[in-house]
Image 1 (cartoon, protein in one colour):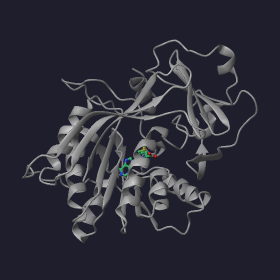
Image 2 (cartoon, rainbow, N blue to C red; image 1 turned 90 degrees about the vertical axis):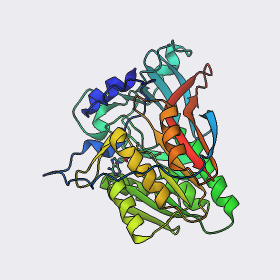
Image 3 (cartoon, rainbow, N blue to C red; image 1 turned 30 degrees about the horizontal axis):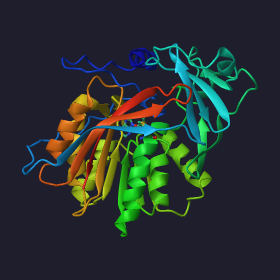
Length: 353
Ligand SMILES: C[S@@+](CC[C@H](N)C(=O)[O-])C[C@H]1O[C@@H](n2cnc3c(N)ncnc32)[C@H](O)[C@@H]1O
């Protein structure tokens, strides 16, 4: 599967193979994780002491496959032969896609019309790893999601500043915020370029967005301006996700919705190491602890890991024992326009009150 190849390219440690691994889920970590902080890494906090949560397990709904269909802002046009052809606003982009082990459905001429191709074959940062067959393009370009303007971006990790499959979560979250008819506080951990934060703010929430990467936070702020949402209450915070959540727990800060989309492996701004298999149970428990008395949802996405959604489903259900509600788990997929094949991007599990 491609994810192995990508991870090797990213120069990050591989996840150890798990005995019961179902498959490795493909999307990799964001741009920031590559920049190793200088100097000695700051030790991470002592591991959280976890006790089994008391009470009835939440109801369950699985498998749930959340699908993003081709739309005016974004479309997976075709895939095959280890690549995908996508339309991001005005541009057609070709990127590697290891899961696309099938044949392309569109003729070669459609692929040859690409505006940008990720080659990744240089050590250069950012745009240097892209090839532009028609005319050289700038680092960013205007994009939209459901009426929200933001910037697409050619990054050195073959990412383009947005994960379109997350739109399923954004729509769901916006629906919860608007239906609540009261002030709603949202925490977006591992928030990257901020699309989820912008969607939440537009829906009326007060948002706290946390990411380890100063660069990603800078891009997110640019997106807020671009979206015309500068007046909306969003706090942008460069911080280790676990440390931030621990601090919020101590301070008594509480949230109605928590989103967390952690990479398999990452680094906080002071070098704090994030290892999903080691650290996810503690962070999930922390997310429960920082909920308001009338919370709405906690949404976890995971990718590039050798696990099934059953694993994160069990973790979420156990962690939200005694809270009522439902834990819904499955995969985020993108539906291809050419032949209707589904490209799985990540696993998710969400607790909904
Ligand atoms: C794949 S991105 C998340 C994508 C985002 N949810 C979205 O939909 O746009 C993962 C992010 O986690 C951040 N990250 C990695 N390790 C971190 C840590 N220890 N604390 C906080 N953020 C971290 C990276 O900088 C990156 O922006």
